[in-house]
Image (cartoon, rainbow, N blue to C red; front, side, top):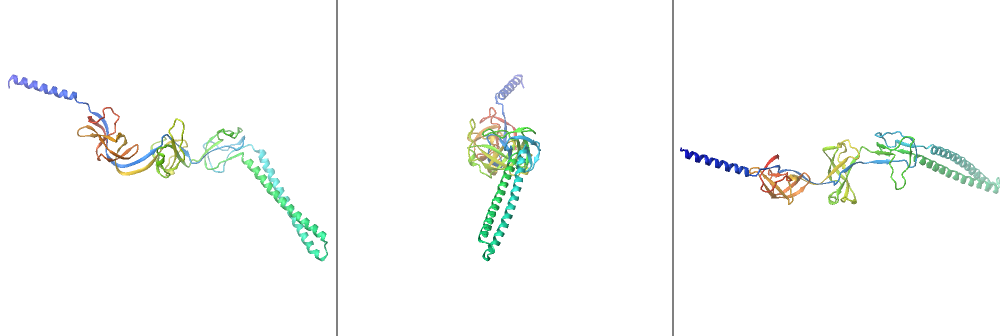
Length: 384
């Protein structure tokens, strides 16, 4: 080979290499995208609360004495478990206790007087009956008989009067007992003492009309809890009592607890600067599966409106307005826009009725710059 031929071959090689380098430099860099395969599985149509809900105890009572007074007994402490009927707090009531004793003694005295009066009425009645038998024989005058009958009637009336006074004394005793009971705070149900607002020898007063004050004792039934949460008024008509639901809490991350709707409010909340909502209540399906709960925990309630099993589904993140999805072709590494028909959906998955086949790849990182129809891409994470 001559020297000129070698020179020509060298020049051609340089030109080809330059063209190759130029093409490489001018070619667009592929976009890294996250993709997910079209698969089959369960899809649910759900609605959730618009703002954080709250764990509430099925029974919770802010208890205060019905009258004011000085605390003389406080046998419980915060966090203590109590039984229904147990004394929680007592005010000074020596005067009322004395009135109860007085009423009891008066009732005993009235009962004794009634017994004596009725015995006298029985004696008078028997005396009148004997004289009435002697009257026809002439052994007893008519005047004497009339006097005996009159005494018997008067004695019977006196017996009825004293018996009525016994009932009055009993009512007075009940009244004294009721006044005494107003100084005692009794647990209405089993529960735990959550908070005590008061100390021994302090003076407590009942709430004035229209002015709420802190309860003396906050009692919570810690054996039963539910979630109350606001639902957007648009979603409320589709919710019915008994529908299945799921409860999640910040205190128990990544855990969901089966539940059911137990109540849908009968009115819409219209609060200033807030969307109109309807309160719902959701209770745990199996209270034994619920963790140790505290009243006041924040919680979310997701109500399951309908469910389709073995449905063709994609992540809801992959669905664009239209609805459309961005398809990733693994062979050509090119993105392509495609219209689809969707069914039910939730925050996690959307049912696909038409437009996709099982196994195709859809892009879930739609917010990345450069993700558009015809763009070159490379998958950085392929979900199975």
